[in-house]
Image (cartoon, rainbow, N blue to C red; front, side):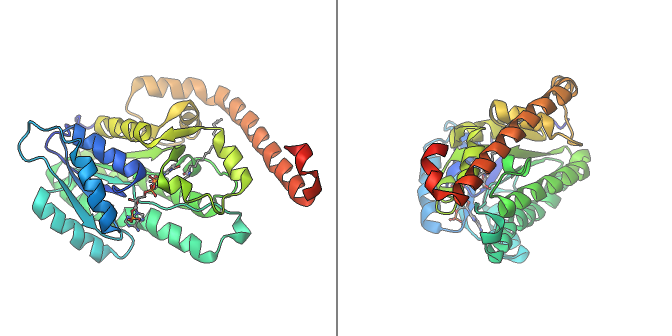
Length: 311
Ligand SMILES: NC(=O)C1=CN([C@@H]2O[C@H](COP(=O)(O)OP(=O)(O)OC[C@H]3O[C@@H](n4cnc5c(N)ncnc54)[C@H](OP(=O)(O)O)[C@@H]3O)[C@@H](O)[C@H]2O)C=CC1
Ligand SMILES: CCCCCCCCCCCCCCCC(=O)[C@@H](N)CO
């Protein structure tokens, strides 16, 4: 297990830090004494976010501050590397990178434009690769660092409507699981977060195309506030936990899909061993209920006049 990380005086870089989960992560790190840098494309929203985060600075300390970096994380590795180097000249090397920049889209597979698959993979997956590559060697040299990836419950299980999005979130898991093994000897840790639906501007941007099935299935795991999700993530980053889940359904999914993920707590490991098979029974019951949702919606589409009876 890596030594516990003290956020006081640490440089925390949050991509997607101008909105939603990323913005709340930035505020929480500011409260814990971190120097925060926010990365996103829109400079206006970044400036607004900077002043919001500044209200949460711990104070008392010396020069704790917030900076912004307007950047498209998916543009190219060169651009990302150059942008991050400039911020590091001001705030010092990145100690904690939280890869939160991301986009989502929900629509049935055949209606999802091919370009959406590329757009999602570029930002959600390659954007995280570029930012991580730009900081990992420095962290290894200094033998200090944390890298967090924000996946999704849709990166643990397939959900109707998320063919494009889910693949990018499953991809992050492969990256995270592999990278954690490489960086372990350097007192570093990787955390991957699997949030449920979270009430953010990004969540509502899915509304236009989101199929009813997607909404109904996702509702099973509830809707959480960005603050709750962010606080849980920051706690696990500080502790150096690999898997971060939110809520009871998140806990269940985390244990069910743990696979070969590492675990550095004896309590969690024991729970995983005991819960694996009973939870599989719970999962089968959930899957059955999802099939019922999909079947009902399919019947409704075939017989539009029967709408009332089915609702
Ligand atoms: N909300 C939810 O229900 C859930 C969200 N997640 C994941 O959490 C992360 C954050 O989501 P959420 O808070 O809802 O999203 P928001 O849309 O509210 O915020 C997204 C942030 O990412 C930035 N961003 C988007 N694209 C890029 C890019 N190409 N380069 C740099 N910055 C970018 C946005 O700023 P700008 O547009 O200015 O670049 C913004 O700051 C995402 O990865 C999402 O998939 C996971 C599970 C549930
Ligand atoms: C036996 C296990 C029981 C647990 C039930 C779990 C049900 C699966 C729900 C999946 C919800 C997917 C949310 C995607 C959120 C997201 O990433 C987008 N909203 C992004 O905007």
